Image (cartoon, rainbow, N blue to C red):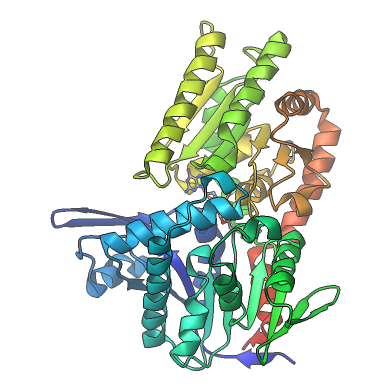
Length: 476
Ligand code: GDG
C-alpha cells in the first residue's frame, strides 16, 4: 500500500544545475546542461522541490544569500554543499570520473583504483549527508542521484534519518565480472542496500546488480517478479527496478513549434539548402563514440561519392570536464579528425562537417533537432541517452530518421522506430546512414510516429510516478 506523501521533494546530485562564473565581484549564473539536469528540472519545477548539490565554487564567493538571489528565477529552492579543491580532485576527478565512470561504462583499462580517492569519496558522501540532514524534515522524500553519491544513504541512516530514501543510477550498472574488480565492491553494494528503493535505467542494469548481490552477499533473499525485484538483507526490504528516464515530451514538442524555433530551423536549412543534414549532439566524453562516428561518416562519403555535397554532418560537442587533461586530448583528437575529413572532401561552397564546440541555447538545439533529417546517436555505452528522445519529441514534421546505438539504454524503448546500429562496426553504420538518407517519406513518417508515441507515453513524469510507487509513496 502506497503511503501518501505531503512533504518536500529533495533531490540530491553532485552538482547544482547551473554554471557559475565568478570574476572579481561579478557572479553570473546560467542553467547548466546534461542529461540529469534536463530530466530533473521539470519535476522540481512542478513540485517546488529542493535541489541539494555542490555549487561549483572553489573560491568561497557564492554565499547562501547570493545563491538565493541569483537562482530566484529557477522556480525551486537550491541548497549548496561546499567542497574544497582537494575534495574535488580526489572525489570528483579521482574516484567518480577516474574509477566509477570508466568501470561502469565497461572501460576497465581506464579505471584507476586508489585508496586515497576512495577515502575522500566516502568523506564527501558523508559531507553531503550532513548537509541533507540540516534541511530535511521527517515527512520529506530524499532522492539521491547517480554514481557520485552511492554512500549518502548509508551516512544518512547513521545520522538517524528515518525518511524514505531512494537512489537512482543514471549510468549503466556493469556486468558482475567487471564490477567485481572494484576493491570496494562490497561497500558500494551494501551501501546501496540501505536505501528503500534503488532504480536503474534498464532491466539489464538490474540483472547485473542482482548478480553482484548474489555473488557478494549470498545471504540476501532475492525475489524476482515481473515488474520489480525485492531484496531482503540485514533485516531490511529493498525494492529494485528498471525505470527508464525520460524527458518532458510536451515541452520539447511545444518549443519546437514556436515561431522562434521555426525561424532558426529555416535559417539552418537555408544555409544548407537541399541537403539531408545528419546531426550528432554529445557531451564531450569517450563513451559517446564521436571519433568512430566521424569515421563512419567519412566511410559514407568514400563509398558513395554522389552524396558528397549532399549530406553534411553537424556535430555539436558540449564542453565537459574541461580541466581534465584526458578530455583535452580527446577534444584535440576529435578536432584533428574533423579537420582531416574536411580537408579531404571540402569543395568550393561545401564543407562536409560543421563542428560546433559549445553549449547551445535550448531554442537553438531544438531548431537543429527539428530541421535535421537524420540524428546519428552512436554512444559506445550510455545509461539512457536523452538526446535521442529529445530529437523525437522535437521532430514535429515526423520526417526525421533516428539512428541509435544498440548500447544506449534508450535502444530498449526506441527499437521499434529507430535504426539500431553497432557503433563499433563503422562500415555498418555507414551503410545504415546511406539507408536513412535514401529512406522514402512514408517509412520515415511511420517510424517517427512510432518513436514519438513511445516518448510521449513514457515521459519523465511517468518515470517519477513509477519510482515513487516502487518506493511505497504516492503524491498527496
Ligand atoms: C547522463 C547519462 C542519461 C546537449 N547539448 C546541449 C544540451 N545538451 C543536453 C541535451 C540532453 C543532455 O545535454 C545530454 O543528455 P544525455 O542523456 O544524452 O547524456 P549525459 O549528459 O551523459 O547524461 C545518460 C542521462 O544522464 C539521464 O539519466 O541518459 O546516459 O550519461 O538533455 O539536451 N543542452 C543545451 N545546449 C547544448 O548545446 N542547453
